[in-house]
Image (tube, rainbow, N blue to C red):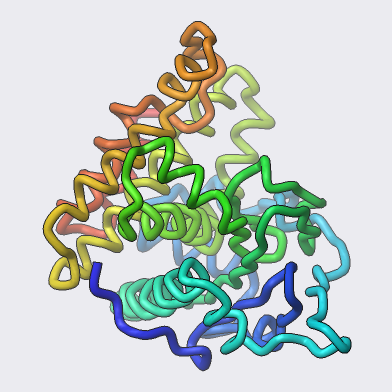
Length: 296
């Protein structure tokens, strides 16, 4: 995928490996309360306002001190420019984040929806402390923390992904960050809060709702690519589909020598994840990815 260069004036990036964090205090878009954003999201993205109003408990209620980046030799914090040029993976991630911000902010602007950029924390082969979701190790893989609105990526995961999917193409890596960005979209529209509330009130449906969240994030990743179709190279979609297939719950369980157990799924099957990615890519309506929550 032929993304343009990164622009540190339009992204918030830090590294728990090597300092940084200089831009994490900036907030893109209009600053509004979570409930205000959720209400607008209910109207624009087809969410249920009656479920959104009155939300008082969510993942975003978790509190904690902001994660502090480590420092380079001599105690100097790395700049965002230094972080983004520290490796090929970091440069790709910063370029993807620049484009993701521009693409989704434009989509939100078209419908009059306030937008807020996520942060990006790049680390490698280690442990990271988040601002509101506790600590995690590299074993967790890429994740999004709604409490501090930051995407956390251990770039060593990309090496594992290349082995698992059989492709080292850049689009597979872009798919990963675009998927996590999809969770940010869910957060700032209020959907994440609705789902967590529904999971608490109906534990029997918790697993199904979790899978729906992940498939929608896959769909949003495809939608981002579709909005930038002119930048897609031949073979990119195949790379993304191979990556989606490689990290399907059924494939992961088989590769681990386990029996396939749908009740333990958290992200969906390989077939479901590939279908969700393709759905987003081919979508002509920003509400297309809501299909995973239709019909109860």
